[in-house]
Amino acid sequence: MMVRHIAVVGMLCCMILPGSGGLTMARAQTSTTSVDGPIIAVLDVQQVLRRAAAAKGIREVMEARRKKFEKEISEERLQLQGEENQLRKQSTILSPEAMSNKRRVLENKVSDLRRKAEQKRGILNRAFNGATRELRQEIAKVLADLMKEQNITITLARKAVLVFDQRLNVTEEVLKRLDKNLPNVKIDIRNPKNK
Image 1: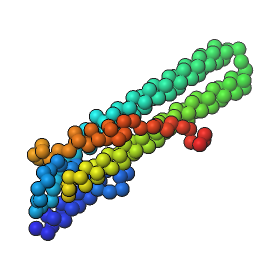
Image 2: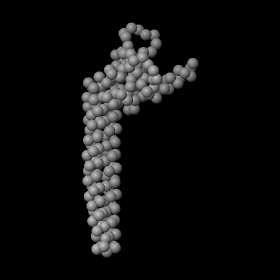
Image 3: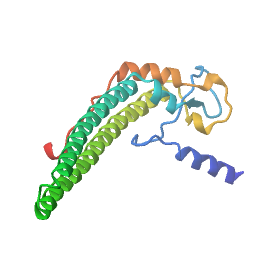
């Protein structure tokens, strides 16, 4: 029996939302009557992260930025391909030394483009992670307020629960409050060198 209680406590501790600083599982809407046992709720965190207005905004902004970065990189790649074709045409005219120098310059440009693409991917990833962290922190705050208001003792993540009474589900209430508290998230897309 004691092992079962320890396992449940361990499972609950593993369901903490990243970056929230505390237990942030689902809460259920309960009646105001006193209950001897714990008051349990269930939250579908993944659904909140998909359906929240701020989450949708993050995805839209990130997709637009990704397309812009891809377009820039693609244009530069085409330019380098043109330079490579031009170099091939000049191979019969240029001396081996001049050809080697021009090829080295072109290879450096290709390497620079690869580094630039990696840097842009890193910037996008950091921006996405920062915005998502802010969203998760707000989910945790909304959930904590709801738990306090409704005297919820434990909130479980939906993915940890196989079957449950839908009256325990607080996902819609959390979504409603989250959309009110945080309709959008500012996404910081800056090059770290410019900070």
